[in-house]
Length: 249
Image 1: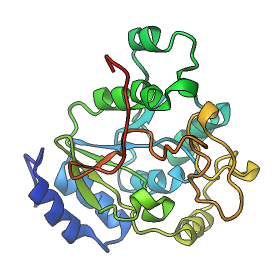
Image 2: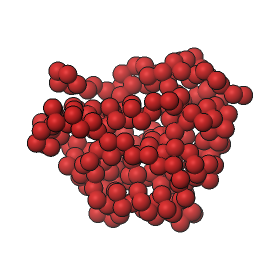
Image 3: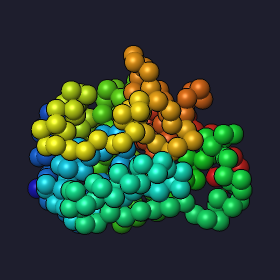
Image 4: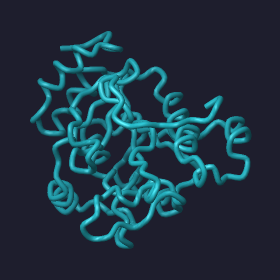
């Protein structure tokens, strides 16, 4: 069944969530790309710690699927090299980088140190705004988020409505064992920082290694109480986090 106009339809998101929950991730991806919103779906990837799994699944279904990478201009050099490695290794043919607006950075992050004084605003300028621009023209976006990653994500549905688009999380119910087994089975390369104790990898200034027994996202914005960057702060229109922005943001 094709869905020609799905924007902003919360009841449809809930129905699709019931339909797709429990289905294999590859089947969910194939349904999204071929039936749910053909030509109007994109993958959003950080090319981080576990990104290779979703990207590998997508490449198997359609390697020409648009993949949006938010280049915050604060990434680890290892992440940028890993991105290039995966693009070549998986045969991804449509990876699009989106960057912050230079004028906005000049106005609000003149020293490049905004992350240290207002990480929410920094994420808004460097992630949320560029992603919204990049998603223009798409009705659906796929993420690699998983329920086990932190407390906020534990109730995450497979399909949710956000800002007039559908957001689909094909790996929502995957466990760490599922992910590691899949990577071993398909001989997928790990992010080079994994071996240094990083388990969730974002921007260089705001990411630190994680100790044994810690939540895998404990190394993100450590000591700030912040757990999400700002692009995943609502669930079907209901806030699941708090973001504070300066005037004009």
